[in-house]
Length: 155
Image (tube, rainbow, N blue to C red):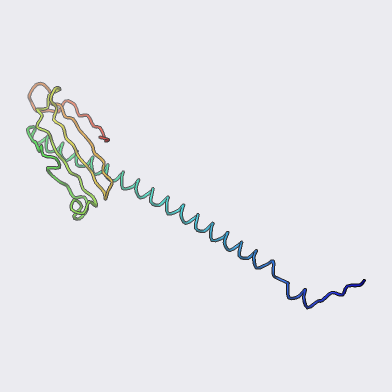
């Protein structure tokens, strides 16, 4: 029994296995591209959040320094309501929360028992960092600052 090959049938089946292979490769390439894009976007968002948070800390520290200058000029300076004065670091920064420091200064007398406390809140978009500075004047009543303690508030 001799079987004859039908060359017409063989030639029409060429490439049948190639089509699923090409589809599988295309799906694999698309999946890898989507994964790389998702990872890079995720890293970009993390970096942006970290940058905004550190910028908010810089604004909070600058606000605290401004309050310290006011205290140095007038040791009786107080501003006890929360966020009683604002500093814009960008145009309309406090109204848009793009870059702002909100500062308050306690009515403390500046003694070791009752220090003058500055709370400065820096904000960039939804990132908020708070710094507290405690000021103690010397006991000789000449108005010189004896010690300053800085700390970041977390809650």
